[in-house]
Length: 537
Ligand code: ZN
Image (cartoon, rainbow, N blue to C red):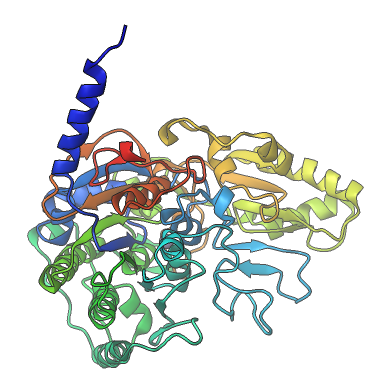
């Protein structure tokens, strides 16, 4: 016996869906707010009145996850438009160590080309060669040769990881001006105008911002050992102070201005095929590092960002382009331990500088009668054993290092290369992952360390403060959980409590523009409840 209802109903629902579905947007705008944790988004959401409020009226996944353990800028940006976690993008950190390099500097910067003559991790040739997978923009260009893939960011690694290998325009701030690594691409005239305007702004002093009552209530100077107190600043800036400029709302204003200039000059979203514009807004990260996340400074930064994104969206409205926006972050962040303790987080502390790989390596070398550095790495994360040691000595060093780190009261876990290689990439919801599953999502067999050290929750991996007072990079949710907001004109969204991942952004945007993505070809999945119609995939 045949059943007719299901087929008829499916046809009816399909016709309803197609009747309600607007045509695909012509411009995808991808905003990455560096170090914008979901904790900050949740706290400030009721305060937003402009651009961030508009985006928060769309589909809001406030339990978004940069699901991997090594929550740094380069891995985080590598997930957003590839649909893949760092275990597949190959971007395991902002840097990693390659002891086989012939140059003296064995540290690899994530967005450098180590084969370029003279490149090293500090003074590098910017390149996407380390990114192992294509970005959305590259796949769009493969399907629609007229599609444009454009990126602008405060940091080179943000622009490189979001746009990838085939890019039409890519501009990032180099400490003085917006520059590009793309040889041969025509230089937009508007970039010169933005650079001139930014240089003029930077050359003048900046008056302090006037805090709203909500922000001034957060103004409390917090003493930090060997550092000036932070917490009550308002971005007064001396003429020409680049560090202060970058850690202020002025910086994101310049980045958004450059993005708007590229939209106008390149007529993005007005061609025959969809375009993608990635924007890396870096100031929130610099503010977080310099002042922490819970003072008046971060408050002023986020309120300014709300207004600046609002103006940017109004600019897009006025351009007449049919656009859609996604906003997320490359990682979250944690406040400085001195203020966390005042706010009741009793176990907040700075890392023991004795956990530095150099210090631990020296002690192990003395115990095992070995010469040389023995270990390479930082106070946590990927740690490498000196490859020039004989295999038997390397095995002894590994056993001794694992024992030493595990015995330290600030260490949560140590996982060896072999343990991570044997671990399956998890398929469950990222909020339920164990520590080794988080570390597995950061593991690349050719780039990861001989072992990885994970610090306990609320241990800040800055021992003695010299510059940054606070940071990120841990496997804990204050660093992993980020907002993911999808917005399109006319789309009424809602807040979704279920966990999502930043790797879901790429397949969701692909569905929105009818770009087929082969099932299982990426780690992410199309998210329902967004302007994308996933069931058509
Ligand atoms: Zn970052």
